[in-house]
Image 1 (cartoon, rainbow, N blue to C red):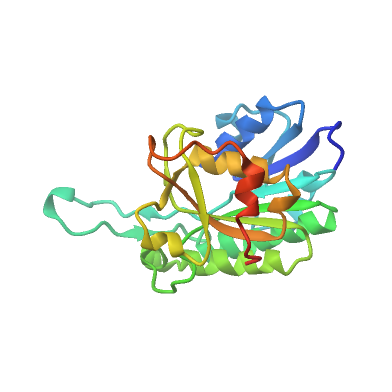
Image 2 (image 1 turned 60 degrees about the vertical axis):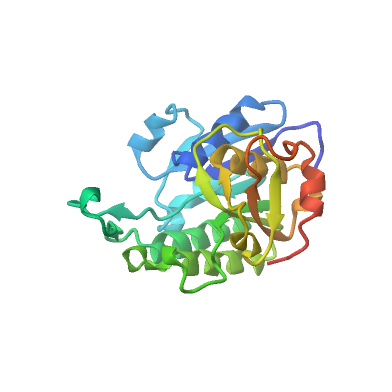
Length: 255
């Protein structure tokens, strides 16, 4: 990839909490990137500025994604099913809230079919690199996240990751720890595999750091054909990560 001309990057789920950060960061780095976003509704498009480079499409409909991926060099997949809390939960009474997914927006439809559609469309359009953001916990079918709304979200995410790894398109699969809404760039990032980080005290990461890793992955060959878990040390311990090439070199697993 020539360093001179900027690469065109499509971010899907661009109105989500992490997607918004990726879209904004790409926009700020005009010398390197041409940003595009994909969102599900006109309302979401307005939420992130309503620019012409934001496409509105339902990822569950394969045909609708096609225009957004034309002429794209790289795709960052940040779409995800979102469980909603059932009304009537009273924290003062103890117990746990119950969750549900809206009809048609279960993980099977969003995280499996929706991601598969994106991968197929990107491959057909000649996209050269796909970054897919998932979650740690996928090695454990009994992970609590799977029971939320009976959605099996990690099972379906992992199925989509496997589909991407088998697609032949160069990929980077990023399985993030617990996401925090805090400033990025101030912590030391740690990579692992097979959920080993879940056995440690360092299993969270800021959305801003995940967003940065997505964008950095597009710039290094060392990030391709890799899948890794990522978290960070607490702020104030370790050295904030600056050398992303070095970070990707530490990732050795293909899946």
